[in-house]
Amino acid sequence: MNTGGAHSHTHHDHTHGAAGAARTRLAIAFGITAVIVVAQAVGSVVTGSLALLTDTAHALVDASGLLVALIAATMLLRPASSARTWGFARIEVLAALAQATLLVVVGTYTAVEGIARLMDPPEMASGQLLVFGVIGLAANIAAILVLAGGRDSNLNMRAAFLEVLNDALGSVGVIIAAIVILTTGFQQADALAALFIAALIVPRALRILRETLRILMEYTPEGVDLDEVREHILALEHVQDVHDLHASSVGSNLPIISAHVVVAEECFESTHALRILEEVHHCVATHFPVSFEHATIQLESPSVHRREVAGTLHT
Image (cartoon, rainbow, N blue to C red; front, side, top):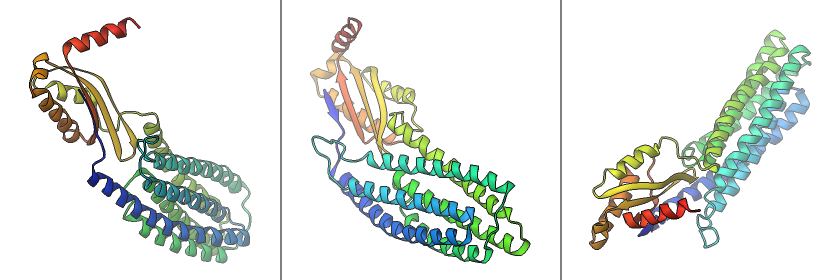
């Protein structure tokens, strides 16, 4: 006896609606960030600032990442098919992975170049640097406000929000560097601001990389102890064994679980097997930090399980 969890209409409509809202937010944020890239690129040429150039590169990565995120959010709206049974649920994980990788590259470059400029700082046009820093911060705040409401909807939106937030903090670093240079003449402030931006970028990017790789490697979702899951199922009446227990995630909000559950022979001679099946589904959907709405549970009699084990031993 085998049952698989399927999308209900309510779950599908909720997912579709959330993806549509995310797409709208990402489209607006992408437009704002594209304007930031152009403005800061001009500013970095005019001022010669490493901090502003770094922030421009960061904004360019943001714009690219937001574009990828926008494409991913659009593809999430496409329905599943017999060829793609989960639709494009994993595309948001791949988008987040791409964004995080780009952020690590930018952060590493910034750190190396910033250290070099500490030794030999160039002259900065601090007044112009301040103007472009303020423009960048204002635009970043607008993008943050757009994305804030949907930042927890999935991993893709989290990565996009963190990119824009980091870029805003980078703009703050540019503004502080400009003020320090303007008031004290301390030219190394630009390189220090660049290093500050790198320190903001890399740890957050590595955290997202870790989360995306956990999903792609099909690790058990965080917060779930499969030994505890097994104990819960074994505690159900007439359940004798649980094996082939696996849990993973298709996307950041789509955990799945499967198991073979051995129940007493007499359960198949009555309707009790169906009741056990319902109890197992209820157990995995409600008793753990992650709700497994998509569960594939196979019920087996002890005799079937013995044949299965014997077959395994002979292969």
